[in-house]
Length: 365
Image (cartoon, rainbow, N blue to C red; front, side):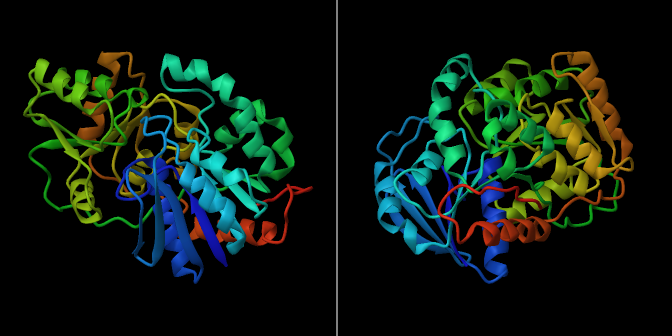
């Protein structure tokens, strides 16, 4: 099949959606599909990355949270019919709206839906955007959620998609075996885009309650990066909180294999890929008790070392981190793999490929 994947950003940009799209595209290529990514960037370019054609269109509105490329929309309007299916990602970005308007190619939509904005201003705008979001949901032949928790949020706000919604959990990748030597430094891994709602600041503050043998490795970039670095410096943690920025796959695997524990203090997640990847590597993990994280815990099973902690309780979070870092590696959790995700997604594509209007019946995994 020829698949057009529409995303707000793409590798090497980092984030949960970007990682999801990159891994999905790699699996589709391996399965023999013809895949093109249609995305936005500061400048126009076309390149092939690991077999995926990546078309980047220049931004008309470069604002960080409201990026919009009119050339992307115009190109889709003219060329969408060349694809068997368009697969748009993220309700919280305007690129999905471009995929939904001006063409009749069957559309699959993965909203990565949080149900609100991540600042007071964005939360206030969220209800105003809902009619546009409803247009994308109505246009989609199938809506793919990554957890049942996300599905319930979508149905709460868009009940009309009930017959077209399917849950396909995110996948994990095989992980290298950790070093056999017990680490002298207990390294705690925190992975994700540096946004306010990820609450990395709570984790940094909790580090002040841990001994000097503990180190926090922060992997990711984002608008909160400078503020978080300043916070670590102000708390006297500059040497114990290390900001790695964006890492390539090899560097990230090295960081993961040397970690003693992992943490996610995020307030909103559609899935929680950082938690799933850590558990798949056998890393003791501390996470916020949000519905998405609880669902990942159910997928991982009772053998996974996972503790829930409230990031607003600094003492409780620090105690959980200390326990996780001291626990030692466990057997890797058995979670859905990316080949599982790709197979289920291709079934959805096959189900909608010959439709030009929203489906009348349910699509099931």
